[in-house]
Amino acid sequence: MVYDDGGIVATVPVLLQVWRLLREKGPGLGLLLNAKKCEWSWLNASSTAECPLKDEGVPLVPTSEICMLGVPLGSSSFSASFVHERLFPRVRAMERLKGLNDSQSAMYLLRVSYGIVRTTHFMRTTPLAHWETHAAEFDKGIRDAAESILGTVFDERAYVQAALTPSLGGLGLRRIMDHADAAFAASWRESQVTANESWLRPPQADSHSGSQTQASLVIDKGIHGRLVSECSSDREQQRLTRLLAEHAGAWVTAVPSSLDGSSCVMSPQVYRTAVRYRLGLKLARPGVRCSFCMQSFDVYGDHAACCKRNSDIIVRHNRLRNLVHRIAEEGLLSPVLEKRFILGDTPGRRPG
Image 1: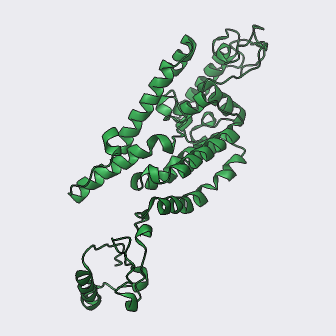
Image 2: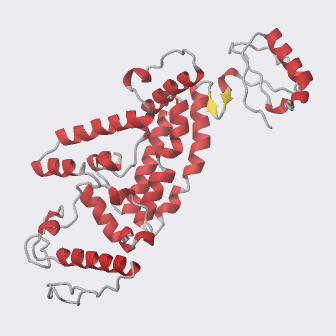
């Protein structure tokens, strides 16, 4: 068994006695000290004294550079450089997503593997004030990647919505700047309970309560409410409100896999169009006419959802028909597929 990452805070005589005990009694218990992996730090940052265990091979670590369990506990400048050094090399792989010829898969990976999930450890352990500049840089990198994948440039309002959780109409591209303080407060609260100790209350805990999930949802609801209150039209308000309907964002979180049928996989063009429509971005140029009814096509794409001459009804009918037929076939019921063109022809599309 390997024991690692233990910390002892005490006076010099006590620490030296602990070291001797570990040296003498440890091997019999299977505990072998590795001096090179041990560290000695003075709590008094101004101390210039050498490490009392220097001859044992224990290095002296400056107070400003103390680190434990991958968490920087020293100065704010050290914390900032520590986060930058360990965080950004991991997310440079986002550049590969930009060249992926599959918008749906690229956005799925960006959300679940390369987004804010990469920063959760630092959000929960290191105050945002220590690495705020790097957090803003990371958030910008996520935005740039999303814009490249989707082939569009977000206006500020659209990206604020995109940063919401999918259940509130967003794309799940949560921003560190919005959620880091809530994550830190949740971590402090949960760790204090686990340790059964009473610690100094950080300022973040006064603004956020509950678990990280609960606190982040409260933040997202507040942002969504602000977007609704700032709507410039009834149409825009209705657009944001209807996104709260159950399963309205299921296509955003769906795994892009054909195992459950080809309907779960969206072509880049269709996926990008769906995203733009969801975020209230323009879909067409002014003056474009509907190819079915020849009426003026509004730039936000509402006409496509209500045109009485389009083929959506037939497409939906055929998909449902094929699904029922497939289920019946797998159930060995010997179904007979509906004859083709039973609904007649539709301008611009042949049913089948």
